[in-house]
Amino acid sequence: MSTSKADRKERSTVREKYGEDYYQRIGKKGGTALKEKRGSEYYRSIAQKGGQANVDKYGTDHFSEMGKKGGNTTKERQGSDFYSRIGKMGGAAKRQKNKE
Image 1 (cartoon, rainbow, N blue to C red):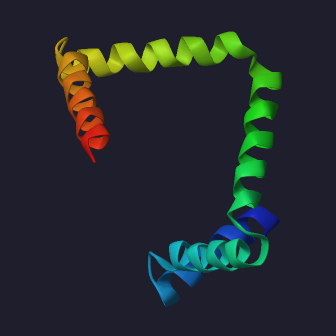
Image 2 (spheres, helix red, strand yellow):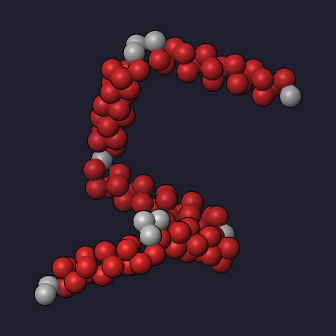
Image 3 (spheres, rainbow, N blue to C red):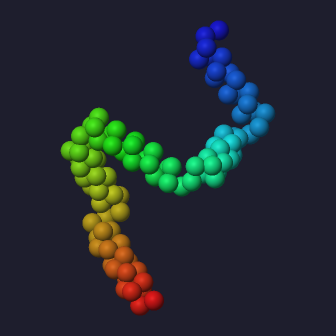
């Protein structure tokens, strides 16, 4: 049996034994422990490193293009007045925040 096949079998056995959300639970525990040990700044720094690595790999034009694709897809799904509606909601939230 190959290593990858053995790994899949083991994951399947673990999932059957502990349930579908097992990996989510242990991941959350690990993340919480790491945050307590290293602080929330640690996550910020590794996110910046990962983001910079992606910029280095793909270039800034890639992200601009992806943003446009996402915006166009949202416009198709939600309708052309979607951005107008959420813009008004954001503006109202800012006004409420300034009043406090």
